[in-house]
Length: 229
Image (cartoon, rainbow, N blue to C red; front, side, top):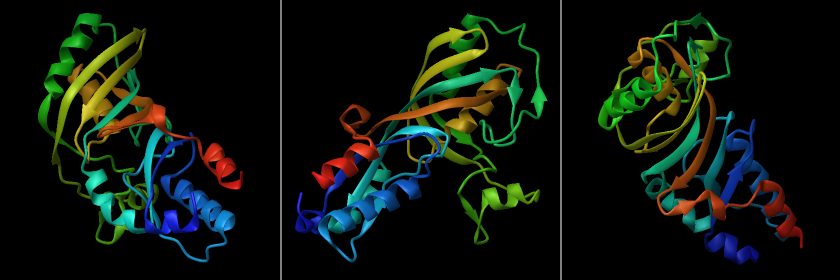
């Protein structure tokens, strides 16, 4: 692709690696495009944040295609991952240490599968305190890391598919198809509650956004390498 191609607008499918922020991925690609084509300035943005502890599909738009970011953000998303039953963390994932443990002896395979039905359709979900949502001009995770309490309102999200794909003792593998704004970390937390226990998210991968599939995505390293060749 030429410099003009990137300016006129491209939709790039990137497989975000573990521990990278979505912001870091955008910056790396912007730097690579500028270096490869000697461009001083180019618009680059992503269509939907992935947490650093999540991997998978990140849609990145350049140039004039950045105007379509909101359209991509609104599309249905698919995730796969793993919940761990019997314990919770303040962040609902592995960003923070386990704070509470719960009994799990009463949980059966049939109960796990049946409980997914409680989350199909439009549901009320409370976003995690450790999230990038803003309240009064500050990110929620800023309040959380400072030990401050803040009121968070529930919001309506939609889950069209929730499938348990494997049960390995307390590790529950799943696939979820959901609307924009759904927090899988909150789903893990609420799923644990519904089982009269606790749960947190240990692994998450975004596999689809609308018709875009992670199988068609390139790693950041390959994209940068292809720019140089």
